[in-house]
Length: 175
Image (cartoon, rainbow, N blue to C red; front, side, top):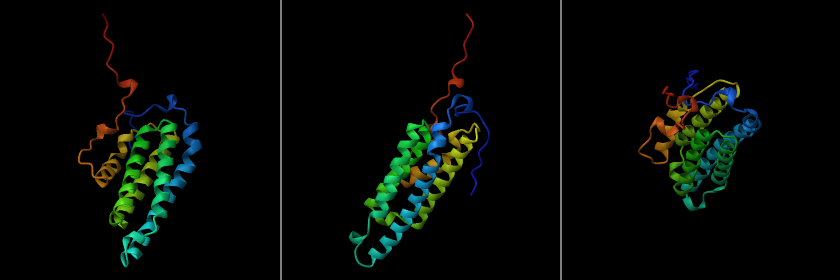
């Protein structure tokens, strides 16, 4: 799956103004944590299936705890390096995992597949940023929208991801 990302300048911090060092420093750990999250959720699906035969209360919640912890750490790391919209998307993923913990029947192959596609798209976006490309975060709106729907939000709009851009301020007028 490839996300079509255009090399536009709207809603993206110019790479000459952004220090990519901190993001590069955490990028491998972000990748590992997101991959580990998907594996943990797939294990949780299997545990829930086994528990359905007897009682859902006996389902091993280790996988869901690992997934939630990974996402929480990724969100914090992304916030720390200033990639707020990416952190916002990961926060939605964490909320989804919390819902899975409360309602195990919501954790299905389809929903975990959605989490995986969101992770892949997010990593692809971060990869473009690390390569110095100016990429608007709104390119991830389809994943943002899917995650909003998964956590039960009814209102979502691409503007939710826009944080403003210093280059898009009101023009100065001459006196």
